[in-house]
Length: 212
Image (tube, rainbow, N blue to C red; front, top):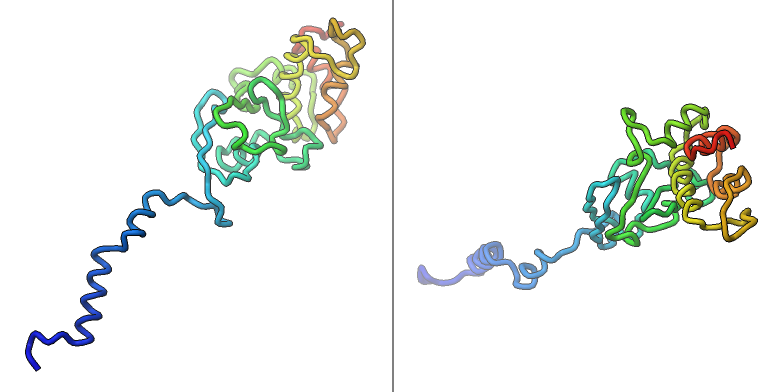
């Protein structure tokens, strides 16, 4: 046997070293483009939102609701998860000027859009007029529904200002400010503590209609 005879062991060792130094072409090409995956193996998608005036760049499971994106990924926990079925209104936020139940919509559906939560309306140092009115008129008890109530009320007044009618609107050519209008328009926001009279008073105050 000569010294340069190739043994089986030497062949295997050499092959292993070569494989470590030069990965397969397919692997080298696939690695850079590999998509991140969710815990369930689903490919993640990039979602860009403007939330409370700031740009948010997220990698999300495409099934992530807007509510979960706000709470779990952006840590904006002012928006509450109540029924998670669109029946209580606790998760109401304002998207592109319209109030929506964030538990009923996917974050990917709002790519590039503007979202406002209760944190974006005001701060403890500079409250939004609606937030201040809820405090003044004690428009809450446990407070769980309050962020959704306030976001809904802010957008609702803009709807009335724009002349958008409701089922309670008697004259479709002019929306009149009344308790019946407010109750109808806020009916999607449930207060289990039943602070409804105080909520109506707060909305009236914020709208400058408290003595109407």
